[in-house]
Image (cartoon, one colour):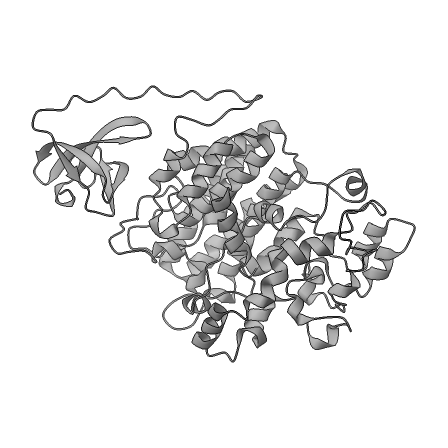
Length: 509
């Protein structure tokens, strides 16, 4: 569990697209954190029951929420180095940094108690309180509905909340962590609406008072909505001016980091069901699209086909030219709009949760999410569902261990995380576990060999175009059963038992 929280905490420290105007651009005066922090309002040292809210929300934010540390991050050595590499005077004064590390509104919209150093503070998410604070603390009527009308941002709506979070955790046409920024030393970005909401941590409780005032969306459905909103925001970026970075190359911040950033000895490329592009292609970062496709397969299968073919066309468009890519992005957005509309009206019950979980787990076990970013999204997603259903908890822990080091990530570890099959609490059928393969009788000539390649493909027959069965990795000890030309038939063990296959002999020693 410690590894799990560490990985996601690091992501949360990164700069955090959208429904309507997000608070940064809402036009209202931002009064500052202290307008919320009185002990009789949201600054109580402990939970209280006076007004139907916890009343310790400010304390939770200040002590536990990494958003409150976002500005302070700009003062550390890494941020100073990034600023120097970018030719900036300092990170804590640069708009490109403050856009996502603070509630960065124009000076004329800063109230008397506003402090830039408060970081991503109350009004960065809930909207400038100039007009809604009086309604919020006043008596009578539907205060929440009136507050929304006065400018309170609807964070309880997962579509709106995802749009707000993604304005920094992915980017918009107005603010974006470019490849240049990442090249200067900024970490890559990642996002999962519901997992990040859980670990923020939440400073509210969904109880009777909450349900009386607000619309409640199941956490698992909120996760799905977040993925589709992320997919649509990504497609909007591909269609917008951000794609053209100037010079020979497009904005590489829109592409998959791990397609290029790994050792030359680490032969990571493998065929992908969502892409028809050959080895050597700089791949788009389609991780949110992979999750949206999983959602469609689980709860709205009729859209799975259009989404799958649309994602493939998107990758083909990226190989042609910017116009083809933009056209494919526009076409792919249409089934996503339909999927989002369905999710907004469809409740996720136990059956829907189970369908999504099995789709994700099946993809992990089949190495369908072989790219690190895909696997990261699928792991966080399965974590969200495991917290609700109780299923796959042990497997999720193992997945976080497999994801702990992106430089040493191996897709086969995803399958290994499931062992003989998922854990099954009451209410779920026990999965059928196939019998272990019969042991192979070794010929007398068999010898032990060590794999010298970082990731060596095991093929069904001794030919370069033969289907890839799996991979073995540097340092793995295998048994060489026979040789045929430049090929060796090996025996090796994995989670399904003892297996055999063909590898290039030159990578055995």
